[in-house]
Picture 1 (cartoon, rainbow, N blue to C red):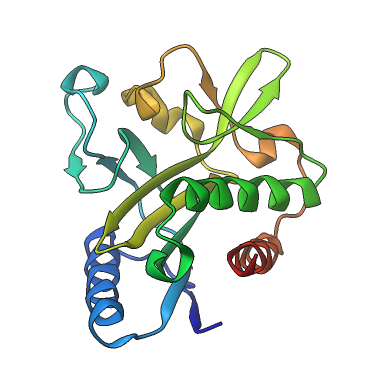
Picture 2 (picture 1 turned 120 degrees about the vertical axis):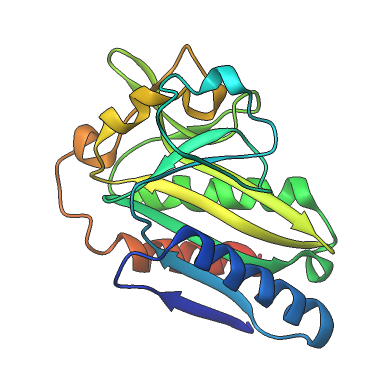
Length: 206
């Protein structure tokens, strides 16, 4: 497959990441440049998708970056793995629903490797874990489609500071919590990037 795999060791500025993806999207649309899977981390930032509401910002002192991705307000920062992509749906029957299911399956398959059972929910986008004290989100998904090319991506909480979510209503959902992999199972997640890429490429080929 003609996909570039990019891994950034240092945190990437949010604006720089979006500009990079938007340029790749135009190149891909015009001249068939390579598709992209990009793993990275951001420094502490709150971003709001196109369907957010102002009352979902609980702490009015925080800075919110408005974006053109789908979804509501979320947080990115240290200890959270972000997977951005620029994937051509013209090659994949222009099937948005199937593509979202593919992303969900990729995350679920990756966490299954660590013996962590998670699930997708049609009502609330993202990947969820059934904790002893309720259902909690472990991964957020926010995708935008332009010219039949999918971009933006998803994030998985690994060992991030969960208190950062107290300033917002994460993804607009009030009755469910947020967790990370370290809270669920304290084990070594060093290989998660490679497992995730392997699963994503495998699912894109099916």
